[in-house]
Length: 378
Image (cartoon, rainbow, N blue to C red; front, side):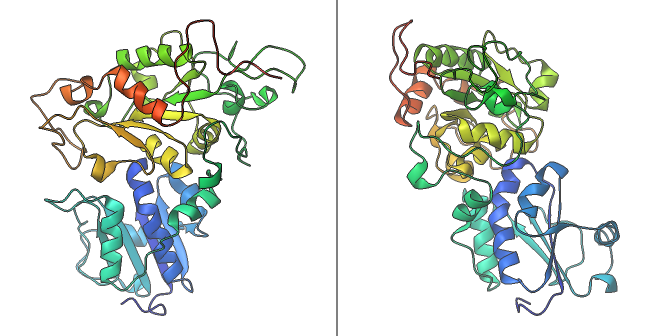
């Protein structure tokens, strides 16, 4: 089954959330590398397509998509897919498709274990004789212009992505403000990009710390009041807190107080902003995983989920150290029904504790109002 010449086509399917997709990305890299002589296809959410296209694979054409759809509930493997290996990473439930060696389900969650999905995918591939690409993180950062270990020190400049970031970089004061056309900014750009002047000569503001108040489930979010207090502490330290809002936060009308907020139009824009940020902070959510893969330092605040299982690569983790946490391995449905929103395991993570964790990531110490470790420079 794992012979490199057994298949003419490899299809990698993933329709999950951002963090789940990023956990599965090394498996796609390993599979495509092993079956390098086969044609490589992917089927995923439109916004996730660039991550698989970066591996040299192409989207499934419409005919192949219809053939894949016909697998569900089929009595046997169709002739049209005779030379096709279909790979589907998933959290724990195998789809209702024929039991055939040409369908490879990779479970990302195993009952009774808190192993990261990435480790479970590696384990499943090893059982089939498919080697894991141990250099997956270096490959990811190379393909998406992440920070290398030697350049990850805070305060050092990194290259701006070749993808046009729709002005997000300039708006948070970390690159040429002349590129701010098309900005998806929910709070307005006035005063965010520095002092007005001739295009390309405006002064830069202080380094930004990106704050992510949202998550895939409301019971994984840190209280917004805590975020606002932390933003004030960051500002007094000479840093620029910038709230990053996704569609769910925009729909709920999340209020960010006096602080700037941005709504990236796509994941490429989000990565462009991350590459220039000083640090990030957020709950157990997909953007924190993306920041960790890019080598951006930061702090992830965990409550009902397990940091061992879902902790973003390279991120510091802060918890309330409650004995009932973690209480869930997957958060696709309702959990902790007796707990309020946000649950105590998140509400009890203090602002001071989160700020201290950020300082350990390389932020400067707090300074009195009026003082600034990062004065504006031309």
